[in-house]
Image (cartoon, rainbow, N blue to C red; front, side):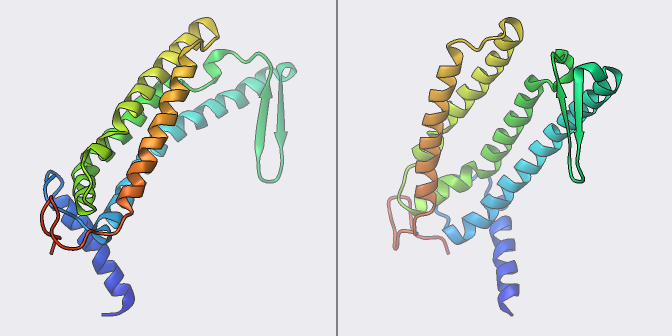
Length: 203
């Protein structure tokens, strides 16, 4: 089998192994078996998010073009060979996409990633002799940020201001990124040789 066939075989093994063990949090998983599957899940989740969000922005842009055609005195449309831009002064709020609709799409992506990667992350952490606690650590902060984002949108829609919620959101996002960075560093570590407190290396 050539190098390309071995890579394909390794990818298929990674995906099938982790899907078969999607609910098994015990044991260990090597980086070679973890990363192809993990990157596939993340890529699929991003595609789902794009499929949910991009049509909203396309619809909003079409509304802006229609508004500009109907109110040329309040809008400027700039066309080049590769792009079209619309500048509107005092555009009605209904021209913009509903950012509240973005939140369910983000929740869907988060739940998909957690559901499909949770056990695999636990086993990968076990393989480097780390606790699942490091995998759970980012979750409260991404959940808090999503809740705060919804409240920010509501507050801005009613008062035109973000208030002190924006500061809480920034702090939560910073802690989330730190926790996520720490998790990624641990996931990228080499497998611990021999048996550790979580068991022997996978076969």
